[in-house]
Figure (cartoon, rainbow, N blue to C red):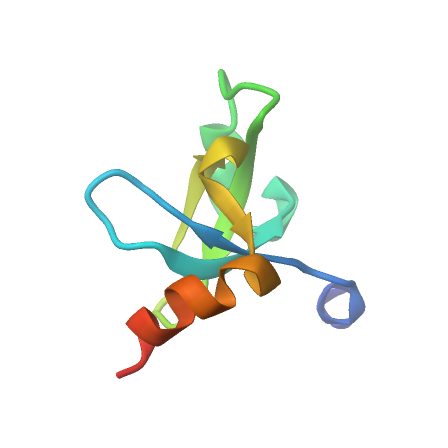
Length: 84
């Protein structure tokens, strides 16, 4: 159930999408996000589903792993840019 998903260790990352700033999120399974499974068709093996933090609604995107940085590695570089 939903409680089980919250207990799992999430892979927290910084994701970079074209035309957007680097933003924190976590890697999710397609079945955890409504509508994401249909969008997974034709995605490469190196592409993962990222759910972004901080939005008013749950925003997500398919992101190539080459455009991800582990959260701890990017904290000094990207963290200051996200302060409001």
